[in-house]
Image 1 (spheres, rainbow, N blue to C red):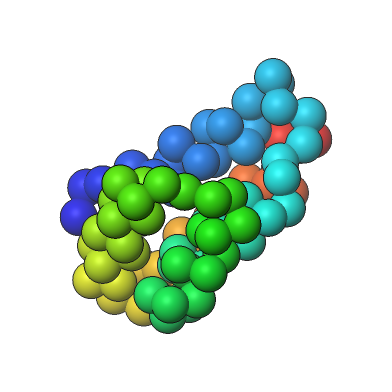
Image 2: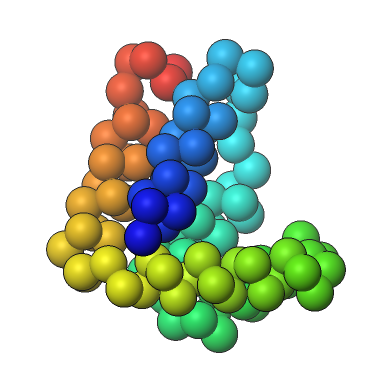
Length: 91
């Protein structure tokens, strides 16, 4: 479960990094799919990046972990990412 919480935090750190002026919208869609969609939809979203088999399997494992979080926690993580995105610290 710690991994499921770590990914959004790492994503947020990258998203707000001064080195990255803009985040790939498709990457954001993958992260959204990780928290809100079905495993097959998440797999399809990852497919845009042509992951190898190990990457796909790791993504599927991460999705299973995230899906064990209560829906309220997943929604709160999405809201947190949106709030950080709109923060003056990220613009």
